[in-house]
Every structure is written in C-alpha cells, then in structure tokens.
Length: 259
Image (cartoon, rainbow, N blue to C red; front, top):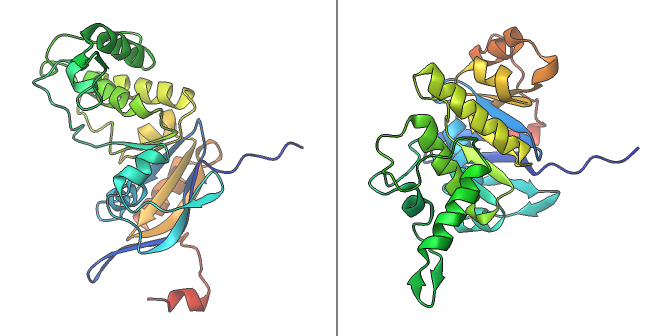
C-alpha cells in the first residue's frame, strides 16, 4: 500500500491567549492538498483567531504547526507567505477604485526597462482569473459595480500570485444573494481542484455539504469534533456545534496544568 502524504497543514495543541482571554486551547485540525476544511462554530468559538494564528497575524502561544510533516514557525504574515500560505480576508481588502489589473498587481508590478509593463500585467491578470472562472470579469473596468462573487474571484486570484499551497478564507459565502453564494462556491471548488488546501470559515451547513471534505467544529476555543463530511450526518455536526455532543479530546492531566 502506498503511504498517504502528510497533511499540507497540521496543528498540534495550538493555544492562543489575549490577556486573560483564552481564545484557543489544544486545537488540532489538519488539511490536505486538494481538500476543503470548513471551520464551524458559533461566534466566539475562535475561528477567526485560528486563521490569524495560521496566517502569522497572531502567532500561537503554545503548540506547533507542521507543513507537510515539517514543524514550522509562523511569527509574522511574511513567514506564512514564504511557506505558501495565503489569506483572503472576509472584507476582501480590495482597492475598489482600481480596475482588476491594477488591484491584482498593486505592489508586485511587472516592469520592463524600469516602466510598468501594461501588456504583460494585463496578460498575467487574465491568466490568473482564467484559473478560477469561466467568465473573466472586465479587466479594465472599476471593481465597484462587480458582484460580491466577482470581487471574491479577484481577491482569490490576487492571493495566487505567490503560487500558494494553502488558501485561508474568512467566510467567503457571507454574501446574502443566493446567486452570489453559488458563484463563490463554484470558485472555491475550482481552487480546490487547483490542488490547494483550503481552510475556510463558514456558518452555513449548506456550504459544508456543497464543498467540504472535512469539518472542524470549534466551541469556546476548543476542538469539539473533526468530521469526515462524506460519512457524517448534518445532525451530528450540528449537535457538536451547539454543544449537545461533547467531542472535546481528553488531554492528560499534565497538559491541563501547563497554563
């Protein structure tokens, strides 16, 4: 039997505090290349904090993170990017007064003889967007009138500039319109088929059923179950989210006393 490759990202006993607030304790989800891991839980469960830990915005206080079986340290966002971990924030962080080409290459401009290479920049923009959508947005039109789904596509394309292996997303399906949500789910499915590992936050069980390979439930800053979506019912996952079922891993006594 051919051994399975190690997870793209694996967390072991990750803990994070903000003063007296224990935001995360003993968190251990993992994600594999070409799979989507959805982080579920009520507000205050620790989902955004976990994304901040992995992206280097708020480094873990304890525990370890492995990248394909190798322990790595992510004290800052630059280290996350160097490890092939990209992040798309929930607000997308787009400069909507610019067109798609200007926003995609804002910072890493393509230059020729010291001047901005408009032709190569536009070609690169089109190539990036074609990886993610059948219908490429207007490259030279402002981003303001675009749908949330189209803006999500541009933000995700920008994150691919460094050829990342994992893409963290903060509630990408928060758009209220059904058509936009469907558009975003199609985008996420394409990202997954680009062999990226995709940890993402969601409150929507429909997202889990449509996209996720695995679901990790956080409750009050702790793991409360990691589920294979193909073999787990919606009722089991909801029960874990609400706390009706306690799936918190039982730790040895010495781990409990470390704080």
